[in-house]
Every structure is written in structure tokens, then in C-alpha cells.
Image (cartoon, rainbow, N blue to C red; front, side):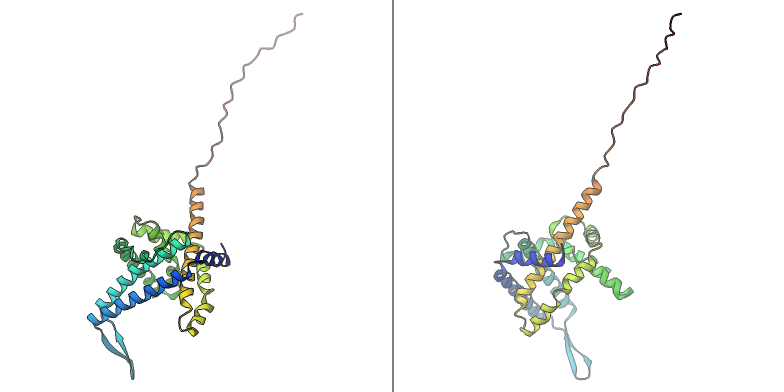
Length: 244
């Protein structure tokens, strides 16, 4: 699928569901923001002066860890919600809260992927960006295959994104105009844009997933063996001499 086809499909899948999708985005922002605020009240950080007269509030380590886990938990639910919309399945608000059982493995997968990406950025910026795109399908892969191994999920994302990283980059780049425009609407436009972008990403995943499955099936097909023809030995027939 081309980028224009992916975006057209995303708009089609969201048809009639924009209102509910916007409510889910508001719910996600309110719940994660409220929890983050409560956590930072319970575990206050410290103020750090980054330059003369400029002071920022730095969260405590414990608050940052809890924030990370909470965001990951709701992020899994949000991704699952948009996967259901993309696939034409019934997607309800409680989908956002439904992936608690998947959280422990998701934390390990996320941390391991984060370490690999960070090492890429330490080496050079370009390798870090490449690795970030290589592991960008991990959430969808894990939601589709909850029993998959941690290293297998990382490997599958890398394999799936081979030859598709630049396409995914261009897909994200195609939304830049809308993102900038959303700033001038005080964020109101994002209630439509965020669901649109999420469904487009799932459409991209579905597209490259289908390509990979077809390729794997072709590679798995055994080579057709030509039938072996056994020729029977020819009997030597003695030539009869004509009678004199």
C-alpha cells in the first residue's frame, strides 16, 4: 500500500467512529495526567536551575518509573483499541484498561528495545534513529502474539521493517502540516489527528505484516520435484538373416 492508500484506508476505518476515538484520547490524557500529578505529589522531586533565573521541576526517580509503567499500561490499551478499529472489530472504552496481564512482559520488551536504541544513539545519531524505526512495530506484534518470546518480538519487528523504515518515516512526515496546524487550534485538532495517525500506523503494520507472511509462505513451500521416469531396458532383437 502507498502512503496515500494507507491514509485513505485510515479515514475510511474511522468513519462514524471519530467521536468515540476522540473521547478515548481525552480519557487517556486525563487519566495519565491525573495519575502523574498524584504520583509527583506523593514523591516530590527537586527544583533544578538549568540557567540563570530558569528553574525546572525534576521528578524523582520513583515517580518517573511509576509514570513510565502507567503510560505503558494505557499505551498498550490504546494501541489495542485502534487495532480493533482498523480491523473493523468492536472497540469499546474499556479496551484501554484491558491489557494489564500483558504489562510485565511489555515492560521488559520496552526496556530492552530502549537500551538497544540508546546504544545506537551513543554510537551515532543515525544508527539510533534506524533502530527506533526497526523496533517501531513491537507493540502491535506483542498484542497480536502475547505468547511470543521477548527476543523473538524484537527480531520479528526488525525483520518486518526491513526495507520499510523510510516508508514509515515518510508516513509520519506526511502528518507534519496537520501537527503544526493543531498548535494554532490550541490542541483541539489533535482530538481528530491522534486517532487518524494511530489508525494509519496500524494500517501500515497490517500492510507490511501481510507482505512478510506472503514472503514466508513462499519461502516455506517445498520445491516441486520433477517425476522420475525410469526407462525400461530395450531388448536386443537378433536380426534374422534372409534364407539363401
